[in-house]
Structure formats: C-alpha cells, structure tokens
Amino acid sequence: MDIIPLIALRKGSSWTARRNLISLDDLFKRVEKDSLLYILDFDGIEQNNPNLELYQRLTEHCVLWIDDGPRRIDDIMDTIMAGATNITLREDLWPEMDLPGVFELTDDEGVYWYQLNT
Image (tube, rainbow, N blue to C red; front, side, top):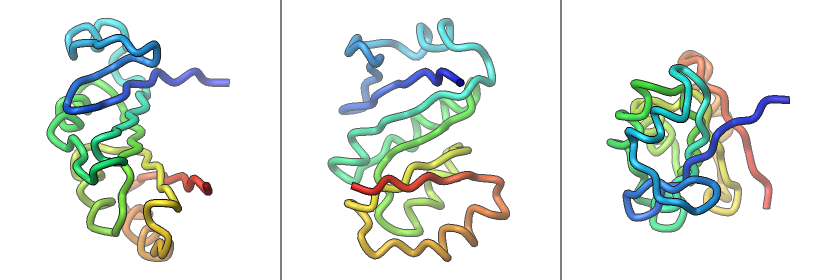
C-alpha cells in the first residue's frame, strides 16, 4: 500500500490534511523530490477556478495527482498542460462525461484518470 501526501487548495492557499496552512517551501521540505502528491483543489471543484499556475510550480518538485473538478475536455487538457500525471473525474460535476474523448486525450500523454461515482 502506498501512502500519498495530500494538499488541499482553497482560495489559492495550501493546506495539509490536518487543516494546517503550509507554504510551498515547507511542502517541498516535507515531500521527497519526484514523489506523488495528491492535490485536492476546492477552488476548481466548487468554483470551476482551478489553481493551474500553482500546479506548474508544484510539478517542478512532485508528480501530481490532481482533483480539480474538470467539467469538460478542455479542463482536462488545461490540467495536463499544468503538470498532472493523474486526474480525478467527478461524475457529479460532469454528468455527460466524454469518456472516449478523455481516453483519447490522455492515452498519448501517459496520463491516468480515475472516475468518482457519487
């Protein structure tokens, strides 16, 4: 079993799973270089405003699994371009999900996706 560190983003700030505010410098000290990091982006999930620029800064240090609530194929592309290696898809946010389109887009990019059924 792998333990994957989780960072939650809300209003552009980073929070640990224990709800402690954490700076990027502290995050980089705690997480080994090139380790997998799960990003739970509430700005993307709740307001359709993902922190794409922050992902780009994080991807310089970590491999990113991003859960930012994509609602269409363009959102998937934006998240991949920002540095995602893994993406979580939420059926409640994208009820008419284009799974063939997602597969076609991610297959050549080496990106894995996971679907949450609610």
